[in-house]
Each structure stands twice: as C-alpha cells, then as structure tokens.
Image 1 (spheres, helix red, strand yellow):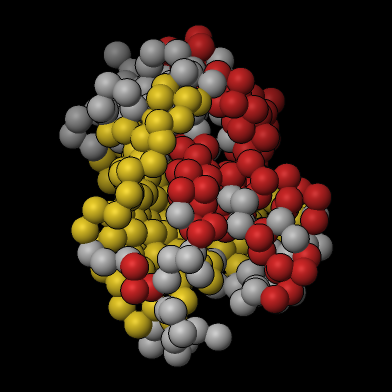
Image 2 (cartoon, rainbow over the protein chains, first blue to last red):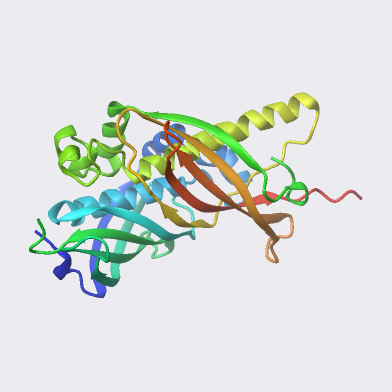
Length: 149
Length: 160
C-alpha cells in the first residue's frame, strides 16, 4: 500500500500505453460533450482543431484519472482529490491514439488541517505515440501517511 | 452566444441541472474513476465523503454537458430570431477547479456560468478568448463545484 511517504518529488510513474478508440471518443462526447467537433469528422475538419473528429478535453481528463486509479491510486491510501490547479489542452486526442501518462510529484507536504495525512501536488502529461504532448494537468490529492487511522 | 465584441463581463447564466443518481455515479466511476468510494455505498460511508460520492470528474463532465445543451438552446433561439449563430471554439484549458463539498447519490446539481474577462488573441485574429467562472450548487444551495474556464469565441465578421 502506497502512503504519503512513498511520494517524493520527481518522476513518479509512466502509465499506459492505452489505445483510445473512435467508439470511446464518440460515446464520451455523446454523453458529456456533444459539440459537433467531438462527434463528426466533417465538423472536426471545419473546427479550429481541424483534422477530423477529436476527443473532448474532459474525456482526456477522465482517461488520465482511470490510468492513475489503476496505475497506483487504488493501491494507495488515497483520501480523495482536493482539486485541479491547471489543465492545458495542447493538441487534439484522435481516434486510435496510443496514450501514455507521465506522472510527476511536484511536492508533498503534511496537511495543515488533517493530522496523519498529506497533500500531494501531481503534475501529469499525456502523450500520443508520436510523442506529441496532448495535455498537462496539475492536480492535488490528499494521501494518508503510514500511521493514519 | 454573442460575438466576442458583444460579450458582457459579469453576466451570469443558469445553465441547467443534472441528477446524480447512484446508477449514474457508479456507471461513470466504473469507466473513469473506479475508486471504492465512487462505486460502493459502504465504502462511500466509511470514506471522508460520508456516502456514495460522485467522481469529481463526473461533476465536471456533467457541467460540460449542461453547458453544451444550454448553448445549443441559445443558438436555436438566435436562429429563430434571425440572428447570427456565433461559433464557439475549443478551449485551451482551465484553472482552479475545486470540489468544496462532495456530491452524493441523490443530489441534484445546478450549474451556473459567469463571464469574468475577455481578451483578443494575436495568433488567431478571427477569435477572442473569454474567461468564465463555472459553478455548481446542490439542492441545498451549497457550492459543490467551481472552476475558471476559457474558450475561443468568434469575432464579429468584418463587413467589406
């Protein structure tokens, strides 16, 4: 079980690669972000992003979350997320992209309000197979230390 | 949506509401955030959330859905009046997303949007950037969600 003590500043983990299919992109967009550029190739071509259908930025965030939960969070004493300082959507997610997530710890410190727990600042970057950076996210989580009860 | 030039800073709109049923919470979490407190009532009760809680990303995604629906309705009203339908562009990202209180199974969240500022962009002369504060309140009027969004909005076309 990972605890606060295991999260030291620096590179933490590389997650993936994971393929994102056209069906997944359209299913997420249909439910949560039904803008034409996320549903249809022609609308995508006519949008500022160009190039056919693109994945919703929120889908990218959700994919990053899934990768982190399976990659380490469910094997940790995570007490939940506190917030997201910043997300930058840098390049479009495309059907059949193979994504990886580089997770870094920027800092980890004891919580001021919750004894035995700490606050971790994660900086993660999502890349496609061509090593283009699709997204950067700085998120904050609450993590129990070894002796938390 | 108005053209970039016509956007009024400070205007606040109600976007719509989303019901966080246990079924919806578990469906989202099983796909995108499979932590026990988002999947199981017992695990939720034992957690800091005090019950089966929606993934914070589910709350964010619900806000997006409600916002897109709201803009689509506004575009339909504009078309019916014979006004221009203004193109909305992609977003370069957002800042300061917070989940001040948990969203629990059975909660309904109403989302709002308030225009904070706007600026021209050098690299895309036909578009401007707007900055918007999006918030969500539960049925008790408590703030459960907020973040500072940004998006490209079309400028008024030049008449020649």
